[in-house]
Length: 398
Image (cartoon, rainbow, N blue to C red; front, side, top):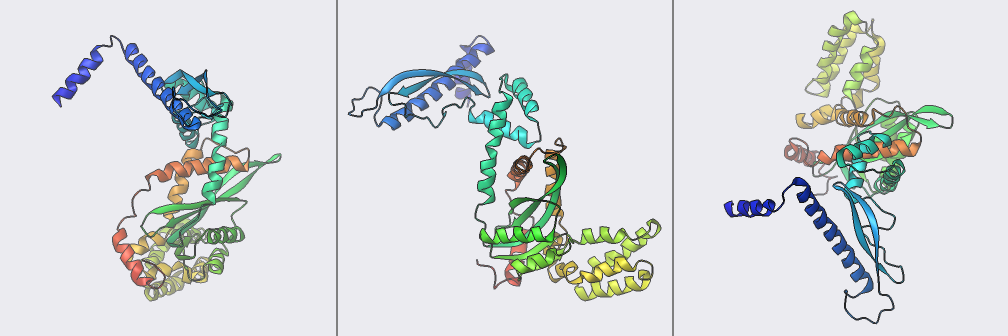
C-alpha cells in the first residue's frame, strides 16, 4: 500500500497546479475517445490503419467536432472514410453531447426540473452550455423508451397486484383538464416489486381499468393471486371478468375514511374504535360479529356508513383468510400510494402538462428513478413465499 501511495505522489508531483492536472486528464480523455473512434473505423473498413486492402473504401483524413462532457468541452479528431458511410456508434453524427451529460439531463428532468432550469444547472455544475432545444430533443427521445417499456412482456403470474390512479392537469385543446395515470405494481415470485405499466385516461373508472387488465393479459399475465384496490364502483367486477380466480381485497383504510365522512366530529373517536374491532378481528366470523355489534350501537344514527361495510363485505374481509404476514401487505394500498406520493414530489413543479406525451414522459422518468431502489424482496419474503405456496399450491409453478 505504501509503494502505491508513493507512486501516486510521484505522479502527482509532476503537475505544478490543479489546472495542469486537469489539462492532463482532458488529454487522456480526448486520446481515449479518439482511439475508440479509430477502432470503430477499423471495424467498418475491415482492416487496420497502415494495412493494405482491396476494399474500395479507405480512410479520408479527419474532421473536428466539439463535444460536451461532464468535465467540459473537448475538441475531437473524428476519422472519415471516402464513401461517407462511416457512422461511429460512440459519437453518432449530429450528436454533440456525451452519454453522461444526457444521463444527467434525463435525471434532472425526472426530478421535475424545467428545461431552462436544467440549462442553468449544467452551466453551474459543469461549466458547459447545452441549448434548450438540445435538452428538449434529448428528453423527447424518452418517448420511444416509454413505448418499448409499456409494451414489454410481463410474467405469467403475480402474487399480488396493487392498483391505483393518480390525477394530473393536462392541456387538451384550449382547456386544461384532469386526466388519470393508471398505475399497477406487481409482486413477483422472487418477492420483488415491479411497476407493470402506466396508462393514461380521463377520470378514473372501472371501464378503463378493464382495458388496463386486458392489456396486462395480452402481455402475458395469466394469473393474479391477490389484488389490492380502492373501492371504486365496479373495480372488483372488472378484475373478476379478466382474472376470475383472483382474490380481491378492497383497501380497508379507504373504507375507514369513507365511513367517517358520514359521522359527526363528536362521535368519530368512538366510531373508529368500534370499526377497529372489525379489521383487527382474528377471522371473518369474529369480524362479522363486530360489525353486528357496531350496527346495534350506531345503525340508527349512521346507517349509511354501516351499509357500505355490508355492501363490500367479501372484498373488505378477504385478507382475513391469510396469515398475518400476508395480511399486512394486502389489506391496504399503502405500497402504491407511497409510490404515488413520490411521483408527486418529482412532478410538483409541473402545475400542468402541455400534452399527454409530456405527462407520460414525466411520470415514466419519475417511476424509473424511484424504482432504482427496488432491488430487494419485500420484508419477510421467505416466510410469505412459503405461505403462498401452501395456499395456492395448484396455481404456482416452482
